[in-house]
Length: 110
Image (tube, rainbow, N blue to C red):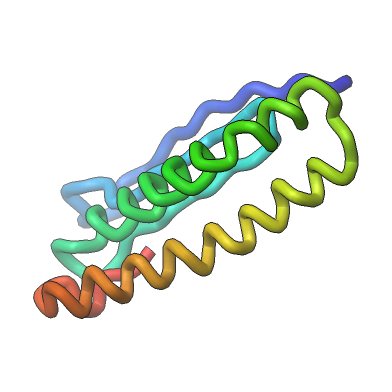
């Protein structure tokens, strides 16, 4: 079995004073999310929210993750990819709901 390790590094780019990027890493599963915050003062909030929600969603599927780590079974890997698809949709719904509650965040994206 291949083993992976990862690191992340960001470049602020010219003219930027803050980094609005966030990463979410599940090395043991080979799952990575890079969230690039955009659109002003709430870009960092949006990027952080994406990774926070990904962690919440995958934590709720701990038994599937543990079984996959033990067996590396293809059907469990496919379940993890399905969870990822659902997680992306849930993250989008979460961001939209939060922006609706606080219109100042309108335009924030990740």
